[in-house]
Image 1: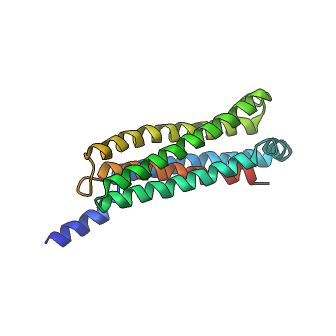
Image 2: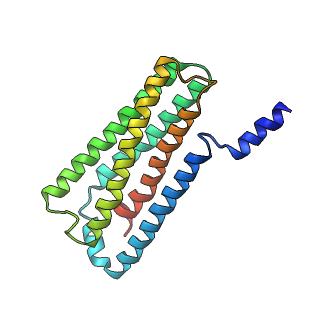
Image 3: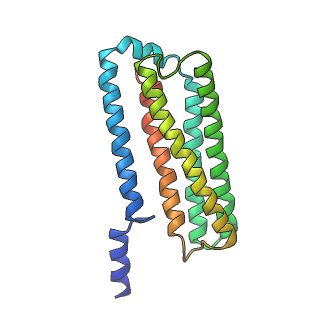
Length: 194
């Protein structure tokens, strides 16, 4: 009987719970719709979009992609150690995840500063409206993710979260992976697509 209940929970309650997955699906749909509209607008003014895209720093974009993917691996590693009952290692890996999240925001902030210094604001052209809105919305997600991970870090440190109580950590991990996934949509479309 215990196995049936556990299997039932596995089917209907994915890691982190059904609510976070509903949010993730909604976020992915929202970003996908925005990228489809971006692609449509891009075709209407291809030269402007390509010229604007060439003004983006592909090196910083690539570094930030590597940083976020690595942070996702670190978050998965933190959750793995928590499931094994090793809070000390879990705490270390979530701290590394947070560090890379801060690195992402600092690099993105530097990139934003550079764009503003060159007058590439929302008003510059249609491409930069999408650039600022999409990357800015993603920036906010990463910032919120860092706040969530901070609470989880202190919970792991105090022992509030452990291998018997990890739903909140799974939920935070799912949110963090969503940030990774959204960036993996945004980076190639905004920075690389020609």
